[in-house]
Amino acid sequence: MEKVTAKKHLGQHFLKDEAIAKAIADTLNLEGYDTILEIGPGMGVLTKYLLEKPISTYVIEIDRDSVAYLEKNYPQLSGKIISQDFLKYDLNQIFQGKPLAIIGNFPYNISTQIVFKLLELRNQVPEFSGMFQKEVAERICEQKGSKTYGILSVLVQAFYDAEYLFTVDENVFDPPPKVKSGVLRLRRKENFQLPCGEKRFFTVVKTAFQQRRKTLRNSLKTLNLSDILREDTIFDLRPEQLSYEQFIDLTQKIEADGV
Image 1 (tube, helix red, strand yellow):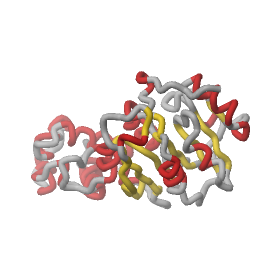
Image 2 (tube, one colour; image 1 turned 90 degrees about the vertical axis):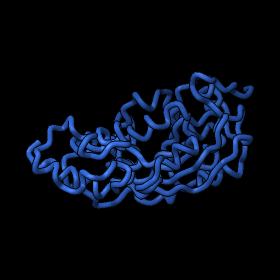
Image 3 (cartoon, helix red, strand yellow; image 1 turned 45 degrees about the horizontal axis):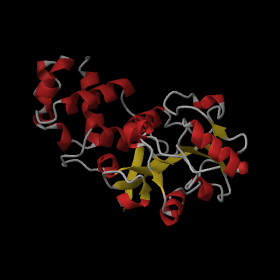
């Protein structure tokens, strides 16, 4: 079967560099799970190296042409190709809550949504790695105090240890994207329980960064905080000045305030 043509509406950029594909596959430590799920395998440049691992590899792919290519060229994937949209698919239909790692050369147009879904699946996913647009990968791993530090940084780092691994040049893709790519790895913090309400924590973080140039006293006005709580010195800060631990503390204070 002939090669698959990249589809712009799916954000496809097929990786051509075998060494980089192998390096991405090798980012997984294969501990705490016996299944890998690759998102958007395309023609399988990363898949072939995952299949060499002593672990069960599944792929999920929305593009029918890619599915047909994989079925023909990777018979070892028989019964393990999920022809669905990852963002809409319920993994429990197949995996029934069992732990798995997620990996991929993620389509840039949905990469942020993939991370938000990962957070929903975090109890099932101890390890996550793959390739993003460079600035998105950097943002996820960024520390407080940076202009690129934001919602994704805080929410991901609350539950995972985030590590930016290496940068990938545009010319190793077909077609080449207009930006560089970055590979990251996330490893879940074991035995970590959020000491505040999850929904409230997400709301506080998202609301704070919607007006990131303002102090928290102003950006969190919509939460109707008490005047006494608003006198706390933490409200003198802007959201990018708070670590995820400080956001957890802030959420606990808001909960204690009875809001």
